[in-house]
Length: 80
Image 1 (spheres, rainbow, N blue to C red):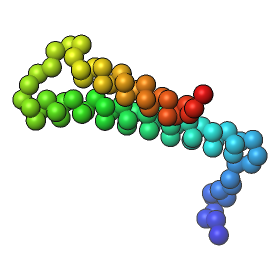
Image 2 (image 1 turned 90 degrees about the horizontal axis):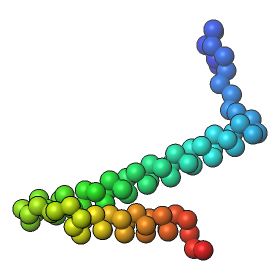
Image 3 (image 1 turned 180 degrees about the horizontal axis):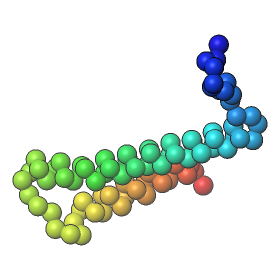
């Protein structure tokens, strides 16, 4: 039963539903990428805290981040 004064909730039909599903999939991919990038950025910080050393700009941490992003993009894009 629907309370008085409220319209019944209806699922979008056809094309609208497809658009929403594509949008949701796109947002999910963006969220996964953001989480992956955050993990990459946090690893050098955690390592430097454990080692008590500071890394200079252009050090291995930046190269590892670039390598990680490239590998993430290749796994998302798939082969070829």
